[in-house]
Amino acid sequence: MNIQIQQLQKQYSGQTVLDIPELDIARGELLGIVGNNGAGKTTMLRLALDLIEANEGHISIDGEKVNESTHWKRHTGSFLDEGFLIGFLTPEEYFHFNGEVYGMSPAQVDEGLELYKRFLGDEIVGTDKYIRQLSTGNKQKVGIVAAMVVNPSVLMLDEPFNFLDPSSQLIIRNILREVNQSRGTTMLISSHNINHLADICSRVILLEKGLIIKDIRPEVNGRLDEVERYFASQAEE
Image (cartoon, rainbow, N blue to C red; front, side, top):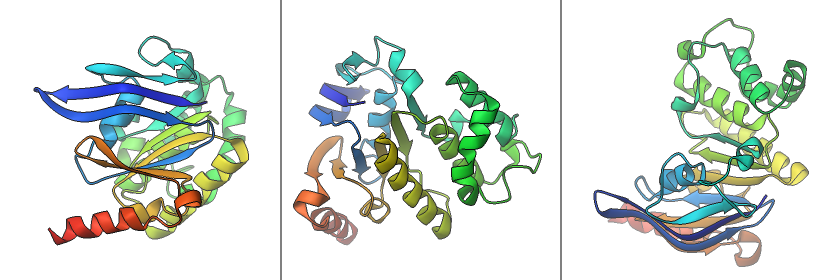
């Protein structure tokens, strides 16, 4: 599924926090959204999921404006923060509940979870713990897997590498790349760390104060030196 952004603006208390005149994200593209804290990454994803209203403009998925249609929701998986989780369920119950929303049987969900066994480790599934009892990192894993195991056509993740140990970060990067390439999933992945996205993204946009200041395709433009220099200059200021 492709995504189109047209004349999109979001303001809080009269201050513009996101301003994207136009952005087209092709079907099957793995788009990295990078920027420092407060750059507008989360706002962009929340608008794309119709969790907040835009002041101007719109976002469309396969030609349907997200604020005027619900069809796209059955084809979109997402995890932005712990608010997406249901703390009084076990991880297995949550995976099955989420799968049911997407029309999957428990058996289909369990089969899909095989891909994520190494990522989940042995502290999440089969422990009889409620999600609220898990560590922050393990809650992050549950949210990511729940969004992906339903095999969405569009996947949106906000800072998915936060709270994960280096091994888990590497595993999920490899899974994201594999799923994108094998299933053609359109992905929007935000991060404040370019190193997490450099080797998996087909395209990277850099946000600063709500504006897209760089739009780079590594396969065309080569390495992401421009983005790396940007973050280096920010660290020196």
